[in-house]
Length: 277
Image (cartoon, rainbow, N blue to C red; front, side, top):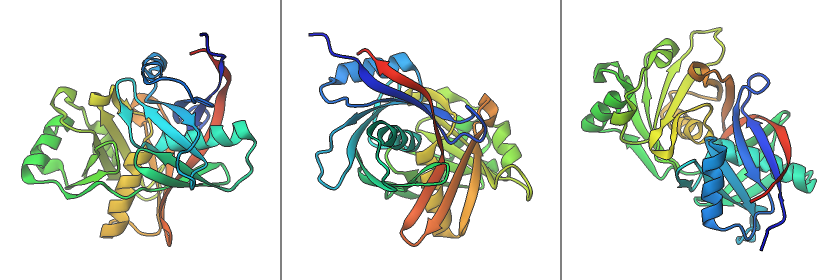
């Protein structure tokens, strides 16, 4: 039986300038789409992530989300969460300022901002400093001597993140990875000088999931924020630029608030229509 075309949006998430963010493909009203079709469409879009919006099974959620990279399904990812909230609200006509998404890590809170959406960082599945052997492995994947890593920490909230702090943003931008040596999804972060384009520069590498370098990454920035605020490396709020080396211009806002760490960014529909699956 041929399925009727489904509503579709492609949303730019975290753009610091028009089309400067990370696009996510969002298939709406996706109940009945089988796993194989979801995976093949995610391979076809070849974006960092493609999502499918489904009716929730938890009464506390507004919708349920499945998230696919070109090669795997994720329990949680940040820019797909913001982009899918934007697409779902636009598609349904919802004017609610708060939403709850159900996904593989449970329920994720969202709220509207002036230019898009913000998500509440989910709890870390794995945290704590990387061991000496892990730091050596992280350094190998980043193509660096271990002595250039100021600190390294597990900040896994679903995708498996470990993150290395470098001395400054210039060192982050200079990283030339050895992706074959990269054992886990790896982030790298360093501070900009005062008056720079943002407070921090971030890069994210996930070759095992079919994404060599992610343009802008909500889950990684949520994990970094949880670590930085919890350890005193940052306080209040800060901004992140990401995607510079691959031609993107991402801008992420991270804040420590009484109800948790929030990650915010602009969201803009670029493509709207239907998709035949």
